[in-house]
Length: 270
Image (cartoon, rainbow, N blue to C red):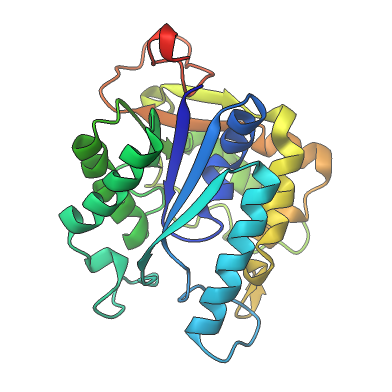
């Protein structure tokens, strides 16, 4: 069975864009490996922690709990520091790392795991966080070094996400600008999508993995994204998160998007 490696910037990112896909692949018998560039020590939280190191340790533990919920076989951290929203963290910040150096570390893991498919982010890094943009660059380079044949850029349909955000912003307790934050110019237009993956059978696993990231349930003065999503009634949650989207590098979108992240592999590999 082919192996899927999913590369992300911070703890909890793996759930939001790819959690259902990872759970589905694991349920179908594939080996699934999760790689995090950072441990999320600069993440916003409404709770008080003594230091960024304390928060990072908690977030590493939360990632392992979320991975268990998704059926992930291995979790690895590259060891870079969370760059923060502005990308101006210290010298070991992922956004400032040497791309070839980081890519070599990831490529070594891809080779060791004999990875068939790698997920990264789209060229915008989704909503533009500096670490997310760096995941794109490092991941693409790592796949070149390792010879990983299929690279999928995790994203979302911009138009659909915008409409969903506007609807969510009308619900009680949801910030008024929730639907507008970094969406209008981020993610990808529907015409660019090559894969639209149905993950409704795995929605319970995705929700459980979201809940595992408890430190990110609130931020200074307001509910954070995960908390907003976990407030949704289960039927609404299933409808909102029942699909995940990818752009396959080197593939021209044509016709109906594919529903299987392994679809591009030769049949003998599947």
